[in-house]
Length: 350
Ligand SMILES: [Zn+2]
Image (cartoon, rainbow, N blue to C red; front, side, top):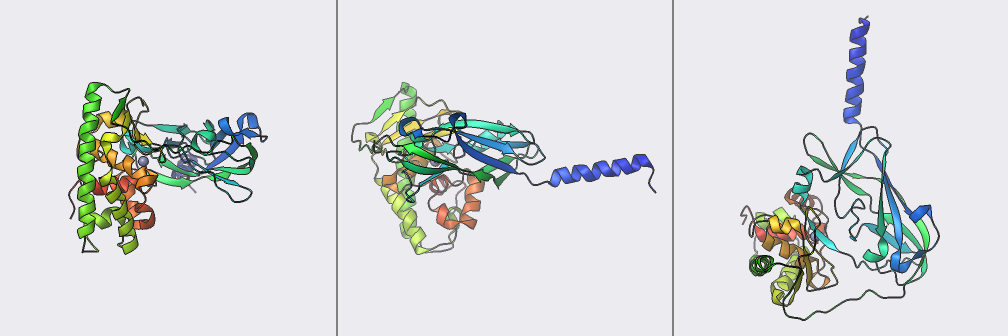
């Protein structure tokens, strides 16, 4: 028999190792404001999303803009009506400074059993023109940051949806087609100069990327496979199409708005509003060239425009983008950061 002190020590070790290896577990639920499941009005369709730590260890969840933890109007919901119709996304696509966010602890911390509520106005992100019965589900992917190692792990939450009548606002999503001269809104002179230099850099990157792709004759070329995974002709042609279009964009006709103050965000666009771009604090802190640069950010954002191919944000940062290339090349060729890193080509791959 063990002395009782030793026995309790062994028990403590056993318990702590159970805690250390317990799988993180989350749930996410969508409700109407005040718990209401009655009508949501299309022009201000506010819902409450509740994230709950259903596991037995505290969790630090990264406030990724593509998750419902952020109140930015990103594509963070799956919405479908009774007839199977999906309202068109008309919100913003963001470039997120994922490493900076991890380092600076841009996380939502939840103790076991603890919940966190975020209110979203889904009318800002989706075209709710049509009245009808809808199912609203929060996207359930979350990034857990290890407090000590800063390593990240992607987990799926159990998701509880909301069935509700949406009273449409009858207004179709506006798609503006701008063709003005270069315009700077809320920018200092210095900021305007940075943007001009960055757009010149972006045009060079896109033109070079398009040429590389056109000349590509080695299906195992590391530069291609690192960012876009296994070669296939159709995936290659998808990316080629994106860079051909971006290279043809005339940034001098764009409107740039420097009035964004969202920390750990480089920039965002509304994909259907070609030629309008918002620049945020991480953009000003970025180098002009190299990884996560100002020039590369313009390429990233330009790739989001529907008119340029409409990429999304499936993975942020070089590590996650490389994983995506390995595991899901079909998504990699529609991932904005993958385009940016391929174009920046830093460190240089051939
Ligand atoms: Zn983006």
